[in-house]
Image 1 (cartoon, rainbow, N blue to C red):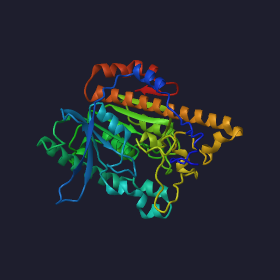
Image 2: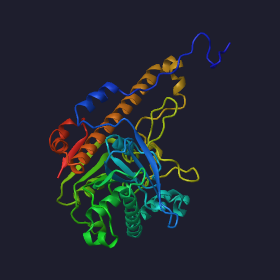
Image 3: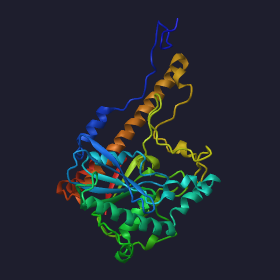
Image 4: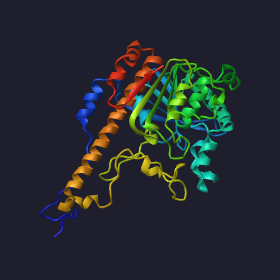
Length: 393
């Protein structure tokens, strides 16, 4: 007779699940840059005046509401400011107030555009990287940040105790391209839009470059130190960047400035953008974009299925659960379990590299911590796990 759970009384054994090697991750983390961690953070929704065109942003900060430096984070194409983001939470735990802003609604709703609905996702994405939307994006972002800064200085709840003299501008994907544009814009261009902040540092995750545009957006030398983060697998599912050397080209075009390039050995484009998706059943969490309207999978320029490429860990077959019940499949199931565990551990190690280097960079150039800068310029490169690389200058 079946019990209440549906298992036979003689045996009810749950299938083994993949596990992160937490000891290996802890050893790696403890020998690197010591990232301060707060006990708790809080997230708030910030809205614009009802008398104007509507806008909103999200602010995540340590719960004690002590004075904090600010990171303005611009998310990837297709993401809203409300979507969970692993880097936002981890930077807030490290003691920063993190303001997430997607300045244009069309950037968040790109997959609902007419081009995307017709299946031309590459064209829909490329349209958002053109100069006209960028000009509108910068003007809108200037207005939003000006209003938020003034409300912060008036001590508005949730926005109080933010140090606007210690600001970093960070972004991923389209957000990174916006960061690049601002970081290298001539001062007169920023004056035209009354740009309200003077970042001490810029962080560009999965930056954009095109070979046939030698000086995109009139680029010049970056106005403050820049950290670029990418990976050897940093190609996007929409066909914008299918050659990872373009990420390095974006870094090289920053000119002679205090700059760093962190290249992770094994990280997908969506993972680098901080996307957070919950695990399902015994599966490890993957970083897979949601299917566009109509249920079709987005295809890259070479027809690669975005879901397959954007997963960090091997995917399970539907009959994996039954594998252990078949002695012929036992070895294969054990190897699959090991492979998933290794992939999850590799992801955790990559996250440790990302957080340590990015936080050290922020601490060095936003907070002015000499110890953080000394770590970046010395031990960091040797500390990184095999395959990860940090280049300076």
